Length: 123
Image (cartoon, rainbow, N blue to C red; front, side, top):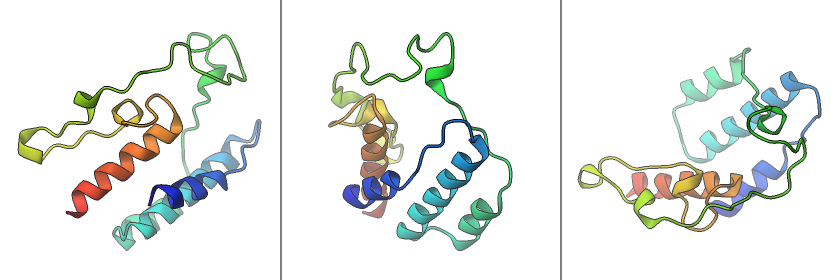
């Protein structure tokens, strides 16, 4: 599933200043992922119909980055197995880029952690 998630995300064509178009593309991608995961059709329809999205371009935030086009993270986050460990006897699962055990701290880590949680929920 991880490969298909990465392939879908590669379809997003980042447009420098068109936040509305970027938000629409991201929503379409997310709807595709939800369809692949077999999520509720009503939720998918609501996402597709949504007209208002917030786009946050972190590299352009003054207190986040001095580089508007960053190519790497300093220091790059290390793998922390405890961050991915389930809690409450497996009823609470953690997802997020820092919880990924392969690519923490980057978009691939966010995708990897989401895929891990989806696999756990499918059991």
